[in-house]
Image (cartoon, rainbow, N blue to C red):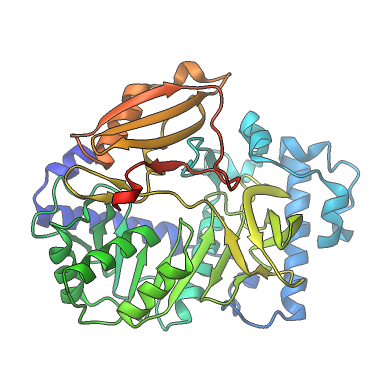
Length: 446
């Protein structure tokens, strides 16, 4: 079904469409087998047992053998490696670090040629927060294992995937929310609220929808739920329920944001750090981030003080294995604990404010499906003007369609905003050395 057809439907039919879509997603994510080692206790923050490390090494050996046999990039690198004797400590001596730039040069080299996966691999696009999305291939088994870890995190709070929940969706659920910003997937017991329409004018209807539904857990970008809670507080709107937990992901969760969510909703925030490449899965309830040894092998490359660049070997996806993959994020660690870290030193982007008063806290979906970009930065110059700095990719710049990017940005912000494209050779980092993919010169008014 096309998005245009869905948006033209009445609310009740949209709910039916979301339910059908949700049922199909559930089957893809949970129906089918996973290896026995992943059916055991995988609850986060557990004490790592010797059996966990044995299972990690077994999975690594299987993955290395698969790469040696079927993945073009690794064939020569692993030609003389005896996989049955390899340990996690051998990786740094055996393989070079893989950067995103190297991966994007020729992603096909990393795709498994195994007959088992012929015409069966699925595709997903990274969010492209810097304007450079990547198409990732993955197996059905990898996705099922991935969602096994998702369920185990929810189990900390006596919830599961189909518990009564609310998702703040980073997608367009309707042309206008009106008095009904809520849509429903009844198969998975999920209420959907679009993160793109939160404003002074709509906050009351969002709060009413949440209070009526009273979810057991909320799944949201930090920026979406924080904006809602701030607006609700300004208007003295009250929440009449307390979810068992709020699961945040996809953006950096600040200490202030965690405190606001937990104090306002009388709940616990469990922050999830992961990526489309399935290279890492880490969760935190405030003290530190726990990364399960059966999901990935972590390495930490020291940069300065307590900051380390994260290098991971994901153990789930045999369809497109990424060994010793440098994700591009810094983490902070104060101990030598091998299966976690203290904090994520990720990017913190500004919020776009539209002429209608909406606050849009995540713009990277606008780059999905956009080819030909090496790097990008969105700058809100005025309330009705956005400028996009673009560095074109030397090899694929002919594929870039500026009109499509402009349309995507307008769809996610406002038709009243003018969008211009500025082609540049360099995009500078901030004074703190960090790159911000979204900058608002309206920040003083926010």
